[in-house]
Length: 200
Length: 200
DNA sequence: AGTTTTTCTTAAACTAGTTTATTTTTCCGT
DNA sequence: ACGGAAAAATAAACTAGTTTAAGAAAAACT
Image (tube, rainbow over all chains, first blue to last red; front, side):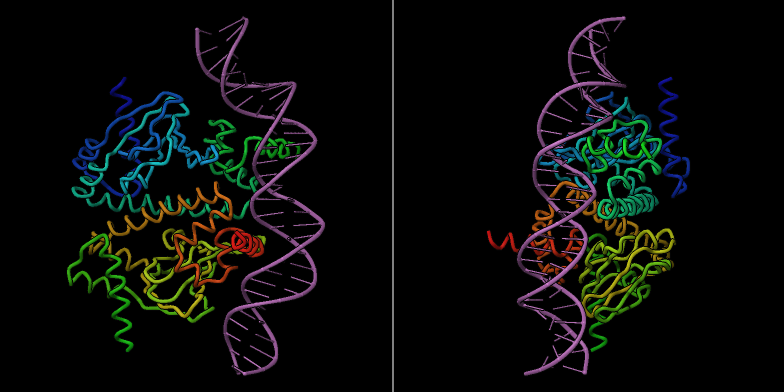
């Protein structure tokens, strides 16, 4: 049972990697050996601001909320990471500076973790992984740019509709106030948008 | 004279690359051979929405404005690329889909261009470049994430002050209305912010 | 199953930023 | 150096989203 779960977690990450690079069986084994397994119960923190982020995370089960709290005490959700998502505090992990994000499990969750040393060893021993992560970051960049633009040019209602159509499977798993914090509006205003939309 | 300019452009890009990877003289020559030179006069377009972006750009002189125009006709500046900056429409270049940005020279400008084929050949022949671009995209991602967060949690006045302190050398080269379009506010409101700040 | 806590809804007063319009200043091509 | 065009300043009326507050619904913890 435990073994089965572990295997399916590895299957998921190997499938994820296989979208961009082909690995031999030995390479797969090395990659797996560099991953640590982690888990968090609902409401538990995976990461907190202040210390350096030691890992990047690949979610295999559940849902993590990556967010920060600004000086006015307002929460801003950077992303919801569900199964098959990579996440972490990139800036902290990469530059080894104190991280600024909370990562909290919204559901009982499981994930695979890779440390900076393993990351470097991976690039060194299997240079193909540079390609994989180059692609991953390139794609993340594209979607961040898109989201930045949307944040600037669209109304909250439009952003809400885009989120619904782009991530319907996430939208119905999370609290409305968390979604509001992702959209950059108050829960009250999201509630108003929803009631306005349903009357139409 | 022409030759000197060309050499200094190559020097600049090699210096830029050298921040992350070391190249042999042969590798430098191959890299240089894969770059095309380009230039644009003030007000001239380097790229327009609609067609697929064929190149990524490295600016060696002048200043490019990368922007889009939303359905309300409002201009949104994604970045100002001055000397030593990489730019382009990543999504279009990478996914070979129609690009959505304008790139316009704000000053007489010069740049080096790399095509998708050259890009692939570069990765193939000098795998170290995967590392270079992985780093470049990782860093771009970090700064985009930061900017997204600022756009969400700070007031226009705060964002203006941050821009001034982070890019003073860009701030005093560009028009106020272009900066307003970067900050995501109207030129009128930026004008009000400035007059308010100077009275303090 | 019942109670406590969290989340969602609704509504009125409020604020940061927009719009529109007019005037003044700066810039740039000849 | 000048004349026209673009950019910047100022101000009043306006709107998208916030704040505060209070009640209703849902979810979570014994």
